[in-house]
Amino acid sequence: IRAGIDNLSFYLKPKEKIRTASVLLLPYENGTTAAHNAFRRIMVEHFSVYPDEKLGNPPLSMQTWGGAKSEFLKRQIQKADAEKLGFEYFWVDAGWYGDYEEYCPDEFVGKWGAYTGDWQVNRRVHPEGLKDVFSLAKEKGMKGLLWFEPERVCKSSEFYKNHREMVLECKEDDWNSLLNIAKDEVKEFMLKTVSRYIEELGLSCYRQDFNFDPLPFWNEADEEGRKGITQIRYITALYEILDTLRARFPHLVIDNCASGGNRIDIEMCSRSIPLWRSDTNCGFDFNADYAQNQQVGLSAWIPYHGCGTSRFADDVYKFRSCHAAALASNFLGYEAFTLRF
Image 1 (cartoon, rainbow, N blue to C red):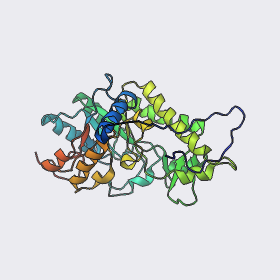
Image 2: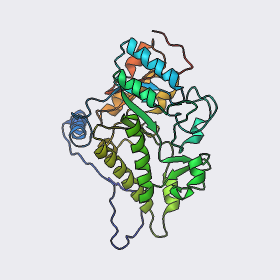
Image 3: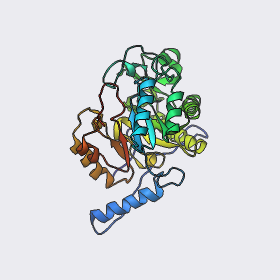
Image 4: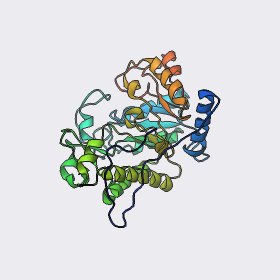
């Protein structure tokens, strides 16, 4: 077995310290089924934030689109309460930020994504900055969950135009830049930004997404003779951010998304849970068999993960196909659909 970090070739400066990648080895006997069960026990006991008396069980969430207007979201909260659907978390996904003017009824419409990096609530969509939405959700017995993608800064964003010194760039990517959390002051900026929203909105779950490949950005930023140092510094800083958030907010659940499942490893599982294990469920008419296969395959390794159901409330097969330790139901979250109850 060979394991490691690709293309490492570096020296350390005086008094400089680093950490390297974690490796988990499990000797086993009596077949792969026994091995998987042993591995799952290790994940539960040593590499998982669950079970945890402070956090309870992985959440059942009412997922909504952040580009939907506040008045719509509040009506849907009222509807879910009236129908006694029993959701534990109120989930606001992407599209809530930036200063875009066009209507973005779902993730496939509009230019909301071009504002990634501008972490200010869009007041055209949410006049009260989402405070009224999450307050109503709390009143109806639901905890707050909000989507972020703080590591990606689109070059079309105002943040990129005003803070080029805080990002890493790659000549092969004309669209994205990478927030350089390997620098202490940038790491603190990210912590401050996320903490502010957790406090102001009373969030119980922080959802962190990550939708592009950082490796070319890390490689371009490396000093001569120190290949891999930026990557090591960056990932170490990421873990420090998540650890600080969990210490600062003991009640906080951290959702590890990364385009659905691209960061499921022992380090991330010890700090977070993948509530959205695959983006195959993003489609309005996704194949329910995908969800079943993911449930069987991933559950052999980690016990706590989840995904989302169809947009349509009467699709019982898809709903049951998505049952997992965590579940997000998004048939209340889109203005573009007429719902049947």
